[in-house]
Amino acid sequence: MNIIVVGCGRFGAALAYRLYKSSNNVTIIDRNPDAFDNLPPDFLGLMLEGDALSQDVLLRAGIEKADSLALATNSDAINVVVAHIAREAFHVPNIVVRNYDPKYRALFEEFELQVVSSVSWGVQRMEEILLNSGLRVAFSLGNGEIKIYEVITPLHWQGRKIKELFSGGECTLIALTRAGQARLPDQDAVLEEGDVLHISATLKGIECLQAKLFRPGEGGAGH
Image (cartoon, rainbow, N blue to C red; front, side, top):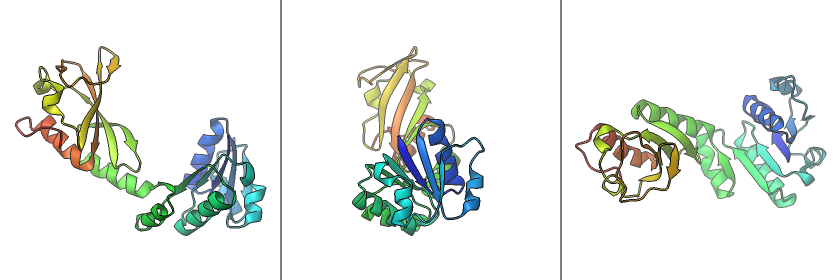
């Protein structure tokens, strides 16, 4: 794939390097030539000094043939404007934008852009670890609004039917692995020792899951 990354700070450099190591054709743009020092020495993609707000710079970067564009600067305004230009003027099919300051998140949503907010995600993740110890996150969706947790069936769940523990809503069992074989959950299935459960939950739903896991006398895991 032909991918352009705008912004060669620590975030952009790490992204560009990972994309390059995955055998993509990567061009990274930054106004500051010293920023390219953030790239590992074995990065052999194109490093282009210039202002991504300039159409000439974007053309030299190959925007007309780009499959994807990542806006990774620490300026939310620049990220939004360049993303809008790339979508409207050059019809880049896949654009992902970094949200640097969470208070500007709504701006990205107004432009209907795919956005990654590392600060928002990081804060939610740390809060979750601090308040919900004992649960392992297997996957995170969006900016952490929904996560998939991996749970080994606790003793007080063994012998109970799935439908007694999960009723959907904010906390849903999406897969059950038994003897190394994953399956979609049957609501009438009885949980056994060693079963591994993958549970999707919102921040609200995880409170119910915590209650059911660690305070078995309380209500169900679903809302």
